[in-house]
Length: 375
Image 1 (cartoon, rainbow, N blue to C red):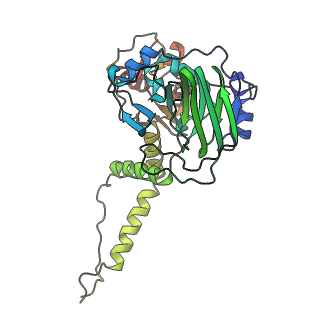
Image 2 (cartoon, one colour):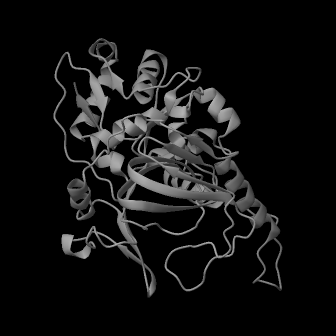
Image 3 (cartoon, rainbow, N blue to C red):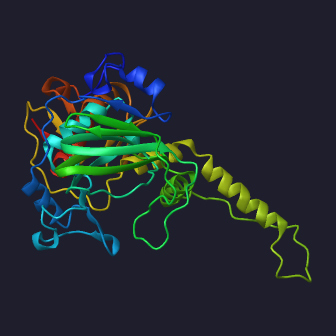
């Protein structure tokens, strides 16, 4: 489940992950012919429609007709999806890797990028002429053609003005500089904010998009700070604010300078708690999306190895292990084995037997929660 950064890969056009990251990542597009030779769509058309009908799957339907652009959100009953012979529509299903093992295995080929950056694998099905219009994304994306053909027009965005009055964000003055038709197995990498417009050529066009999130400072701070606040605990016998030198005042509405300084020091002290900050960040990065939930799992048996559920997000730092929005301190052999589980997403029976009693109890709890499974 891990990728050698120095091994040259067909997926990257004969480049190693280290070369690709150095030359293209967040820098410039990269077209790779036959990145996945003989690729097979991770889902059939009926399976895709069945997923789009579920309320635990995020789906969208984009149509371009004489009346303009239309955007609807799922779930969709079969009668709500246009006939396959009708041109100009696209069905998008997010998080395919959470529901389909073949999509999860396809996604695993991109684990040369830190897990903390991974968003999901989306699949789009388009009829002839279907697409979502010229636009930019705020994230890095690999666009893998898995069925049919799609024509991509790509270019740097000099004018980010959007078309007004439409439900999708379309570039008003898109000026592409490159154009390619992708066949099954071909892949296009695009850094954030590169303009692109993909249009299906013929029917049964299916494209898998592997997206990597690029959080903003504001959204990161909001989530991390809220978690730090929730975890904030008062020590025993915490001193209260005191102001024995406060004089009588004729401006009672004015906040005393000493109280302002007291509050400032309290906030700075809370923010300077490196342990709390590390826990909050790891919990934030591993928190499953709101649409994801787990069913209870089977208890672990003696002699079994472990395999993370495909919906589970697990990461670590120097002192902690994070899984599905929770954090744990780890050290020594337990830390090494937990990190191996996070990196490989599996842990053999021999390694499981080396876990301490407390760590084995912990993974047993995770198994009963459905976060991992015995193998």
